[in-house]
Amino acid sequence: MGLVVLGVDRFLSEGLYRGLAGRRIAVLCNQSSLTSQLTCGVCELRGRGLNVEYVLVPEHGFWGLGDAGEPVPSYYDPVLRVPVRSVYPGVEGFDVLDEVDAVLVDIQDVGIRFYTYVSAALQVLEETSRRGVSEVLVLDRPNPLSGSVLEGPVLRSDFRSYVGYCEIPLRYGLTLGELSLYYNSERRLGLDLRAIPMLNYSRSLDVLDLDTHWVPPSPAIPDRETVFTYPSLALLEGTNVSEGRGTYTPFKIFGAPFVEPEKLCGRLNSMKIPEVLFRPTYFKPRYSKYSNSVCGGAFVHVINRKVVEVVKLGLGVLKALYELYSDKLEFAKTSGRFYVDLLLGTPNWRSAVMSGDLEEFVSAAREEAGRFRESAKPFILYS
Image (cartoon, rainbow, N blue to C red; front, side, top):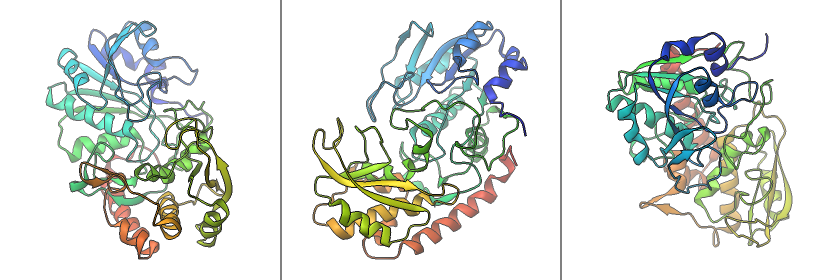
């Protein structure tokens, strides 16, 4: 197998871009939307004479300068030389779709349903369909978690939100190109949607197997290894426990001022969560939760990323925290619902964490993911 050739590389090198000559184009992208030679995809398109009218940007903006959840402004970017329109949280930016003939999607996701770039991409498909812009091209990129493992639960439709936009498993095991094809069919959007597949890519490859350069897709995923702990520790965003934002190792470290590191890690390691070890530690976030306060907590060490179950790991962390600190642990609500419910796409996790068996929940979620795998088969691009 040769070097992985990204969708954007094929689009440019094989002359596929010529099919959009003379068309007015909007591109959903950000700082991760680079070629294999680390050149800016939008600049490459403009350099070949394509009429890029607008750049659409998700959470954090094009350059990744926005904090988590912070509204993203629209502006004219002097480097890109294109107007930038925010589609986070999806208000004003979509109006410009009335002024274009085609939409390109080229952005790096992380293979987890609640990562908001997934929501942005799917919402762009919906708005493109609603506004009568039928032509959409998705320049495909790898799923950093690989496509060989899927983990539920599948989102319940009554828990749909911006951190759960589609009824798919939490770890959905598709590239964004495959997911877009699935969503176009499932929602009957009627788009003339084409995914430009990668070459030499296998769905068993994860981000540490790839020979392509790693560009952090968002500020809190600074390196490749964080991809494997982010899906688990992001569940802590719905609690009063720090998920490590404001440290140099976000989503690898977690804790709070009330946590006793040795006690917590002793409980977590006794749970024998497969292929994971927890190391007692202290940290002081520079911003976000408990800014400038000393937190006790744990550092998560993934021993074998190929078999780690990110849902089981995340629920195990919640369970240990609840068992040890139920009098101090708080679960945040948004719009009357627990935020963790929205992240997981179901409220059923609570009984497993607070009084029941994690394995029962994980097993049921695994079955849901298996059923989704069958429904997604017609849209698979890679073996």
